[in-house]
Length: 232
Image (cartoon, rainbow, N blue to C red):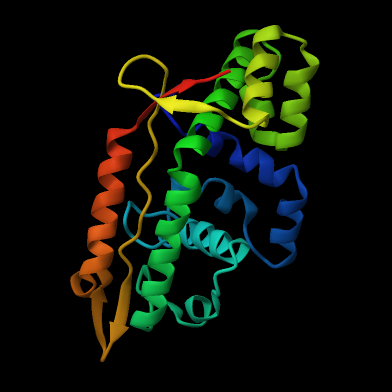
């Protein structure tokens, strides 16, 4: 399921919006569903996605969700989140720092975690197998929820698919190895938010050496990746 062109989801976005409830909601509030569905073609949504380590709607959403469900107070982050030009910023150093550390914690415990990465690799192998056997399609992956996709894979009865799903759904036992095993290459996720102080825009890493050091340490680990051997 490796694709050089990762725009497949974007290719189907318009169809997903226009043929679902979301399109009706957008039209109800006077928003052009076609323009939104083809945002990659037309642009104009500068706050939606930006390269790491910039703040953008996607990273703010992921970060706040993780913090909220982890019991981290997000009130300051939400209250002090603002927009300047085409960039999202925080209006206080306190909010920028809290969000940045919360986001980094999410990387350490979930998005860049070795065990979760291994679990994702096993599920990916089940999906690849399902695609190869025509049990599922790329369109199904985009248009259906996780439960339906997993149910479809399980219904295939394929032994290899079932093995991967059983492993991924249970307690994973593994050890790190230097050769062989399953290589888990996690995406580097962190932010270096801008906060406004005295009318000036300041990057958090400029004034928080501890945060800069924590990010560098995390990035070094994630870029190296993990090689893990399952103990079944």
